[in-house]
Image 1: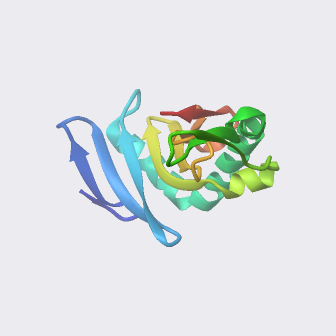
Image 2: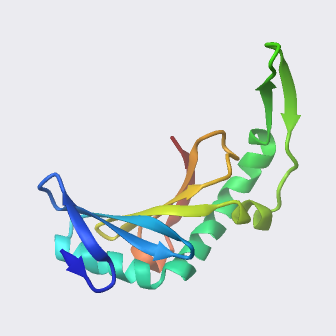
Length: 152
C-alpha cells in the first residue's frame, strides 16, 4: 500500500500491522503502525498526523525525556568502570548534563503508533550504556499524558 504522507507501507504477519519509512532531516526513521482498539485505517490516519507534526512532537518528546531522565543520568548512569587491556578497570565519570544538553544527545530512530498511543524511540549516544530512551504519549498527538523510560 502507498500512502500520500507515509509512502510505502509494508504489512507484517498478515495482521493489522504495518511499517513505513519516512525521511526526517538527513535520515530515515521507521513508523510502525499497530492497529489496537481502533481500525487499521484510523491508525494509519494517526500515523500520518504524527509524520506531519514530527518536528514539534519530536521536540516535545525530547523535553519529556530530559525532564524525567536527566536526574537519573546525572545520579549514576554518567559514571561507570571501563575495562582496560590489562584486565583491570578504570573508573570513568562523564560530566553531569543540563536538561538541554541531555535533550541534544537524543536522536529519533522510530515511532510506534499503536491505535492512538505513540512511542518515540531514541538513540541516546550511549548515555544509558546501550539502552534506549522511549517516550510514550498515551493520548496520541495531544501529548498531555506522557512518560519517559529507559528501555532494553
